[in-house]
Amino acid sequence: MTTTTSDQATATTSSPAGSADHGTTRTALVTGASSGIGEDTARRLRALGYTVYGAARRTDRLRTLATDGVRPLAMDVTDDASMTAGVSRILQETGRIDVLVNNAGYGSYGAIEDVPIDEARRQFEVNLFGLARLTQLVTPHMRAQGSGTIINISSMGGKLTTPLGGWYHATKYAVEALSDALRMELRPFGIDVVVVEPGGIRTEWGAIAADHLEATADGSAYADQIRAVAGAMRSESNQRHYSPPMVIARTVGKIVTARRPRTRYAVGFLAKPLIAVRRVLPDRAFDRIIGAAFGFPQ
Image (cartoon, rainbow, N blue to C red; front, side, top):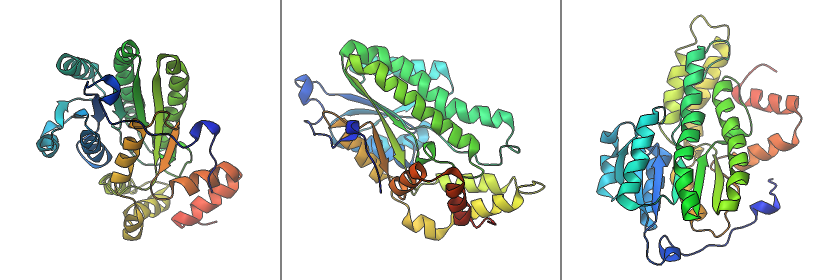
């Protein structure tokens, strides 16, 4: 059960990259491209004919992408100089940026009481402020072109909340709000802003987050919750049901080939049903469902 606004009607597709600009090859920048969603998205955009820059802190993890024609780009989204240099290089080499996929991000789970405030700040620096700053750097060039697409990879966790994920969810809720304002601000300049809200996706992210979470259990008042949530993150049953990263990459492909893309795409395991349920249920009813899913006492 899902609901959509009139602005989220099915989009009409347009021609592949380049045709709308009379032969000019369009350029895309994808952050967090060293694995998972970012890696598959970079490949998908390359297959659509884009000149693609795959950005990550460690370019050694981009070597496989380079063999597929994606240009590796060293970029740390918490370092202003790194982002500025990356955007400058793209403009020097191609003269344009048509698509920005803000995908870099991570989740550090733990009870709000337990997570050091410096770690909470770092999560905001990567997931929100890095996204915002890179958007600030790219937007003037899209305005000058009179076109562009900014795709912010949020999460179904930007629409609903689970225990021990408070800091992570706060960053994704903020991405949703920032994207809404940005969409309205940039519409007069011919720039689309689209949010993608992945559900359960089969990447290395979940296992890493579970390991970090479980390491906080000793001595914590929330130890029982921590072990339950970490177990759910690692669950082989859940992993079997999770969607592959390519479903997000295909969605990005749909967005960039649409004349009028939807404002939001909820994609991947349980994204649509959980967002819909959260929309209609009272808070405490939803809390009970989430608690039961993690095996918490009711």
